[in-house]
Image (cartoon, rainbow, N blue to C red; front, top):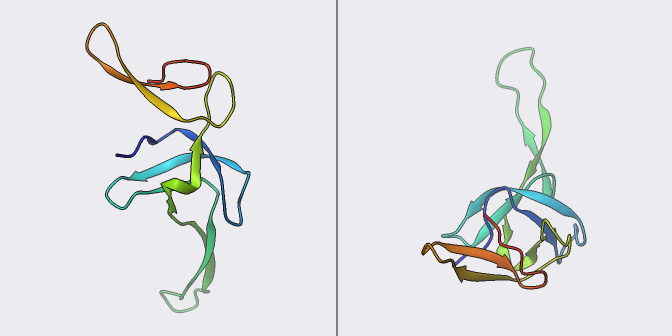
Length: 104
């Protein structure tokens, strides 16, 4: 089960972008990966498609394993672990284990 969702702010724990923060653009639970905006970039070389058009190099964000990122709490602004609460109305919500703030 993946506890991180799209539009969450995360901190990279390992790799070339260690310590940087970014927003999740895409979550892929089946592959257990996420794409973080502006991080884990690669350069892709693209051939020209028509005559008199130049080839280009495009920067693309590649997927990261979920274990390499940690959610940042919107209230206490620290990397946190996520817990789950079942509210009085029966809804299951995520919460910060440090400040006990409930997420969406």
